Image (tube, rainbow, N blue to C red):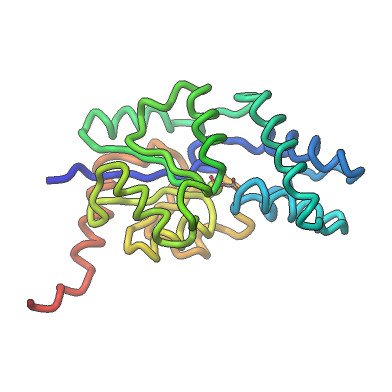
Length: 235
Ligand SMILES: O=C(O)COP(=O)(O)O
Ligand SMILES: [Mg+2]
């Protein structure tokens, strides 16, 4: 049987990236004279990748960007963010121990993020975590991204997983929606960058610390989810 697969969102789930995102974003918008944004703004800015984050920050400062302005600002962000990796970014408490336990139990792991794939791979590599994952996809890996189901389904395929034996772990609405759209149970974590309480996103389960992410919980959610599905119509 295909091993169970746990797919993680990156920003606000796998890694606490907020300080470096804010630092590079402020460095970027300073180029057009805009005042810096704060951590509290981040929950409304992050989630759809760097380009959207920059656009949202400029809108927040009352300076909507023209399409012509975006490429240079995106390059400025990517250069600064890459040059400063891993910066202050760290895995959340208990994550590495949970991933070790899942891998020891024969489970496979993957990353499905709306961060640019190159930035995700660079950051995961700098933190020496690449070896944990069968697949790492970003917002630019496919032509679509979360919450489109195909982003998660494509990640599952690249990881050699089975959608019926997969769970998604995330901190924001796009993660819970992509799981729902792909027919996959979801675990929400409250310590990331959601602009609403994660309970209101109706995930399958909420955990408050990665010590709760055990093989038994994964089996429970997959089992419950499969048994709760209507029986396939008789062929
Ligand atoms: O880069 C972002 O906007 C956030 O991406 P993620 O939460 O899907 O990792
Ligand atoms: Mg996230």
